[in-house]
Amino acid sequence: MNKEALSSWVKEQIKNQTCAALGRRIGVASQTISEWRDMKCNSLRHESVLALSVYRKEQVAATYEWLQMEPISSPAVDLHEEVAALKLVVAQLQEALAA
Image (cartoon, rainbow, N blue to C red; front, top):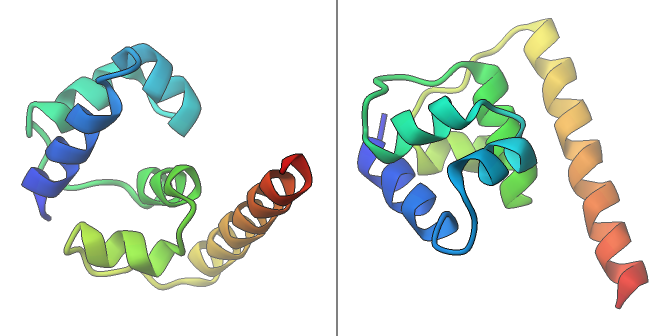
């Protein structure tokens, strides 16, 4: 896992918000954000990768690639990825409507 990339990204994100605020937006605990920032985690659960992909508005596969992690494959994971992809589309549509 590319802890440096995740840490750098978190540090960039918390320049304008707290760890708690970022955690709420992503859907993880503020302690998790702090651990990512401080490179104290050696892996991420699939749910965290999904949450990151939705927040970053990118496909789950792109998030796995960015983190240099191997994607997990199972029917449940596939369903989660489909939901994450739908959330991404909804977010993009909301942005387009707001513009």
